[in-house]
Image (cartoon, rainbow, N blue to C red):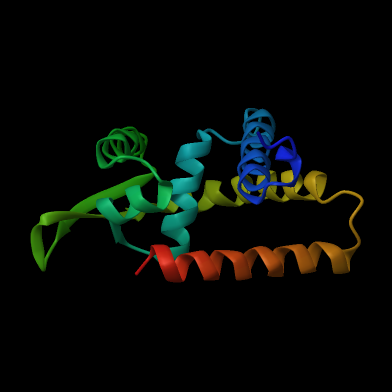
Length: 147
């Protein structure tokens, strides 16, 4: 039995993500009228632009049916628009609305606050190095997983 769980890469990455998410939820309650999942969806859409629902579900790491329900609520709230892909009628595309773009700034501020709290005690150089190392890890795994 492995007793050094605190030194296991996968555990640490997952636990840091869990803690960041819970802290984001706590801070966002007073300033952002969206759930964490909705904020993540908007952040991906802002980054990637228009994407199809299946790709967004993959990015969110949820089942397509779960993404569909999430997007239903977001569309009803005026946060996203869905439309048919002109090149493939079976596919639905998603894009953020102007309302969402205005709110995304508030969500980013909450994310920045969580990051500042998590990186507390690290020098600017250490924080930058940590981000760069995590980007390299993501790149390594992305080459394998996203083939």
